[in-house]
Length: 138
Image: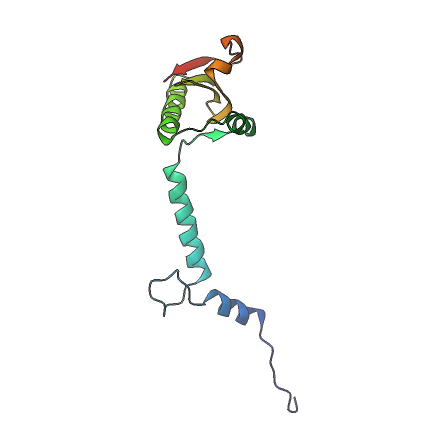
């Protein structure tokens, strides 16, 4: 190669350079961190967050819209009590439960831990709830 310098870097060289850059991930900034270590750390952090919320309720799109439309927001204490009510319903073998909490009514699919709909008790048409197989009053 008469006078032509090889200025090309292989994909492997670039990957090694990128993956082994210094980052804030490591306490010792002179230590290089591999992609595998970053991935493992991230997965462990996600698992820790998920384990903190085991049993946490989900809100269906419909329920979330109902809460927003009615300007209903749950305090952390109310959320904890609602989760407790759903847990108690599950212990009794209830599949679809009415959970009455303060002045709020929730229909919850217990096996999926999903709030299907939510309303203030005063809004419940004639206070009739259908398609449930149990109720929990908290």
